[in-house]
Image (cartoon, rainbow over all chains, first blue to last red; front, side, top):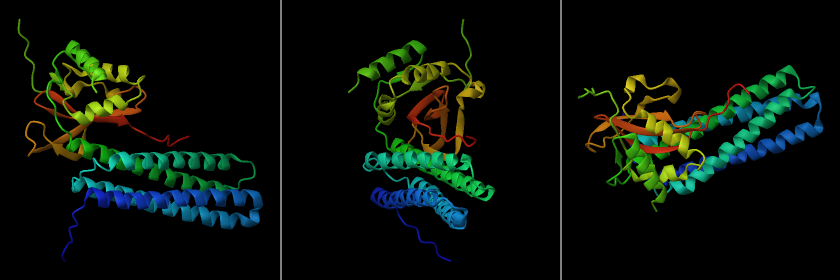
Length: 178
Length: 113
């Protein structure tokens, strides 16, 4: 068995990440529409549809979480130089995290709502768990990019402290640094 | 009087990394004094006796370029630089010196809301 080794570049990682971010945002937007539709219809007749949608969403989130974990590993193993792309990709990752937190809150509120069946509560709980796992994966991916940036950090001179007082001076000097 | 300091004691802090200093300046202004005190408190501490609340530990899955020899790889470490665990920093520990690499928000969702 031969193994293809793909040399990852910064642009490849960022292109793929950008596409995955778009997909997650689409999933979150569609879920908001789906949830409000179900709430408007508000009938147990539609519970099976609701459960189906929640299950599908949870599955997609789990898929996305696996993707981000794999992307983090591949980027790290390739020691990809992300310095050029990091300023562009970071706000997008933060936006996904914010959206996932809002989505989680909505689902938790729905769980508490009077009339929500036990079946739906469990499905909501599983979807929340999948959303949280995705959040953690996105955050771990973000930190992988920060560590990769640090791997390529230029190293200056004159910023070493051997006593607490020297450290205080360094931080004061850092505040003045351009 | 001389005092023997063995190899497990933190003797200096190095923030020569431009990425670290850039990241530090992006920390919220209200976070910086507390983070500074945390880093300050590490000097002359035995790395095996750092208070658990700082979550000072090696990152087992990450090896990074050594600051002493960039052809070599060493384990990265991290610690929480605020009491609420919302911010963390990463560094290497080599020959008694903490070489800081970066710092930023450490976003965690409450699993039991």
